Image 1 (cartoon, rainbow, N blue to C red):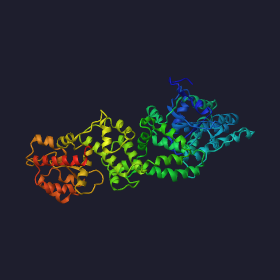
Image 2 (image 1 turned 90 degrees about the vertical axis):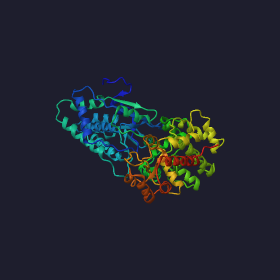
Image 3 (image 1 turned 30 degrees about the vertical axis):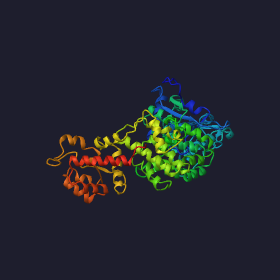
Image 4 (image 1 turned 90 degrees about the horizontal axis):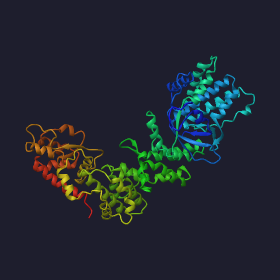
Length: 584
């Protein structure tokens, strides 16, 4: 085969499958899914090479990662990306071997079967199949290999010369039959093309399959980089996430167990653990988002791209998948309660309230390792719940003040990743504030800056505004509203003629989006009052609003004028400075 790239990893399937390696698809990987159009397209591509219409057909990249194994085991590689093509080439090769057997070339078929289909040794003392499929594909793959071997048995005199096939252990779940279906399709298509051929058509097809489909094989050190590489080379592939890789690595530790044991582990240990990452509000599972903050807790210098490799090294001391899941689960309540406001662990009143709030003011992910450490320390009684509550209040005040002033989150990752370790000498609000103030790149707004922001800054589109208005309602004795609120402009964005005549064009431009002109309303109410004059709005506020603060606002302000707005702005500033005070 002549090379079509300068890539040193370019090779052929003869060298990939014919080498003494075993390729493992993770047990719980998504099943094989190529359908009739894809397998027929592959056979057409091979035929074009066999018929010399083209010199070769490039098959893209296959990403693999070497697996740890015993010295006596064959080399094993996990297929990170490329399962569909590797499986399809493998079963097409099985179809060719079967047709050679049927034609009477049993000796040649036997040699091919030994070189490409089964290994001399079993991987992890189980199966010697060179492609070891995932859970739902194993029964179907066993059927293909056994059918191929049976075709050879029927053509040779000495059956003992045919190597024994040790099948893949299978699941009790209903198997995916696509592997066998595509083997049968390949068998029919190739037979129809070559069964009446007077030349060496089947041999040319075999040669094209093994040597005419160049592929770039990339053996990655870090499996997390595999999907990134593959995505650049093959844009249609659905990339694997760090969560996929973590799951595969955990279950790799159970490779020597029976399918029944592995599935019990999956159902009894893994599924409940994974399910607790479900965020009912968004409908998303946050499993993938957990690992970067978790990795930073043990090593603050960790980069996102390094997390999986470092986790693997950490898990080398954990001999079982149960131990790995247990270590991860220790930190699960801290992550979920802070990010989503759930209550996986029960704390007393003050700390419980503090932990519920970050999910509502949209805590930056950079602060997660710091607060998770405080949560876990309180959980283990390493610090008191009052100390933990003070840490949460400190963090909230720092972040809310910055958000109200429009300070970009630049530098927060560098601050928070080391803050828990650096604050080991004392974690009171005063002690933490001294540490933060030693960072020359971190701006912590003082009372004057916050006052000016409340009075002057347009905050209608700021993410923090929903939370501030919700807290304002809570301070009035109202309930914390579920979900996001709708923000109402008392002075409308578009003023009808003859209304709000006390506001000049300059007033409307400078005051409309400031905090003092904003109220929380329910989604059903806001469209109905729109640009009404204030007298009519006030009646709706007083009678129909679900928010206590809005009802109090209506009782207090008989008219809405620039003077009333500025009066409310001053009161809001005093409340904000009290609610989120600056430590001494």
